[in-house]
Figure (cartoon, rainbow, N blue to C red):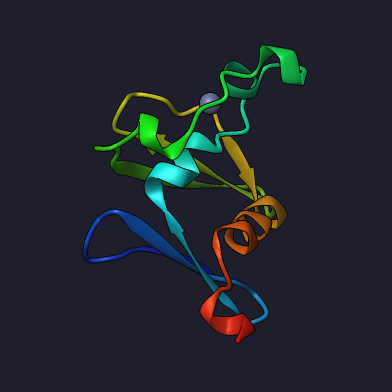
Length: 102
Ligand SMILES: [Zn+2]
């Protein structure tokens, strides 16, 4: 288990407990923030953020929440999103096939 900021500073790689790894673009992760401010309490309240909204986003800090999620602190000051591990893996599947699944 672990999360690594890649050298280009625009994506992270996550190694999971089962040995699989997924990589995630930071702009896509930021846009996918699951918190109530970004997503609202129902679809009508969602800000509908897209990766294009965050061209220069940087990841400042990562905190492990319990045994089930990461909380990211972003360079735009946002730190409310709790990204559940399962959700993160699903996000990677949407972005494209992860290395481990080939
Ligand atoms: Zn948010």
